[in-house]
Amino acid sequence: MKVLVVGSGGREHALCASLRRSPLLTTLFCAPGSGGIAGVAQCVAIGVDDLEGMCRFATAEEIDLVVVGPERPLVEGLVDRLEAAGVRAFGPRAAAARLEGSKAFMKSFARRHGIPTAACRVFDAARRHEAEAHVRNHPLPVVVKADGLAAGKGVVVAEDTASALAALDAAFEGRLGDAGACVVVEEFLEGEEASLFALCDGIHAIGIGTAQDHKRAFDGDRGPNTGGMGAYSPAPILGGAMTERVMREIVRPTLAGMAAEGTPFSGFLYAGLMIGADGPRLVEFNVRFGDPECQTVLPRLKSDLLGLLTAATRGVLDTQEVAFADDHALTVVAATRGYPGAYEKGSVVGGLPDVLDDPDVMIFHAGTRRDGDLWRAEGGRVFAVTGLGGSLAVARAKAYAALARICWPEGYYRSDIGWRALRRT
Image (cartoon, rainbow, N blue to C red; front, side, top):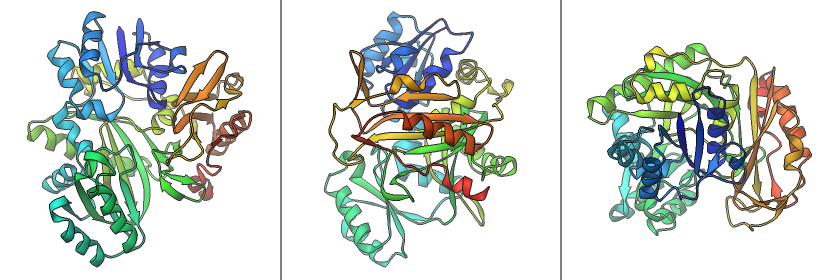
């Protein structure tokens, strides 16, 4: 099969690396790809926002399957356009991608279908004063979310009223672009966060892994939210019984509800969860694999990913099974100093090739650029190092040992990824 992966980040690097192992694969493209991805796929200079360019390339190359990595082209309808051009694509159509593209839609959908989630109210700019009055009277902490896509930076967990009001200001004054035209103000959920990933074909859903990530920039879960600074898999809190409960109470009702509303969901469904005393509650849905969770889950996957994705596009996931290795994985993200705020580009990252001699260590590139024999940092989150081991402690040790061999004074990473799970052991 000829496959095209859409995207350029660490998630897409992990997808390409996993697809590369499939006996079904003949040719693998990635658009636009990156210097790191070029080691496992043929990179094509088409931007993720160039939907027409993607369609032209897929048609001209007679691509058998397009796998869309990032959320924005899904929300903007890339799958719809590919299907209209006669190209098979894995991912939700635009109407179904609203589960991530609009938090207000997701909350309304959850209420309609009895899916447990936090209580909330929704406000647009015309109701700004009402929103301000609401947060002033809301118990603390309170969560303020931009309705649209904000690259992981549109959620504020406000410990005080001033922070909640500042989040409203950022949204309604345009600092988040169109994403902040509407906001969701919701109750803070107590418990432990975890993520479950399901592979869906519009009717059937099968679990494809669990993980726990670390959103805050700094050790001790301090600092601003980021796109994710590390993750580990499997998530201890999502054991067999709890995973089945999430599938029964959240994932399957979502598939049934979307189908009943005429917008069947096919693709990766990422359920961000809070596991509290009363069981699992939905924090948010994403309509693609997480990043860096993808870099943590897929290295453990024993099943043929390409076979699974093909079955999903054909509506026959009920004929498939997913198998994972018995080991653990832990991923640490290295970011440019200043991220998630302003940061400098172009610094040299030394030592990246030197850590590839260990089969239990993988590097997934995100914001890197090849410059002759050098790697340069060109983004906020620049690369991720994943370690595998028979225990989480071993996986963690491998990841951090590899990071210690990389020379990058302009970068930083958290030193405590996996602390919550390791504290239990």
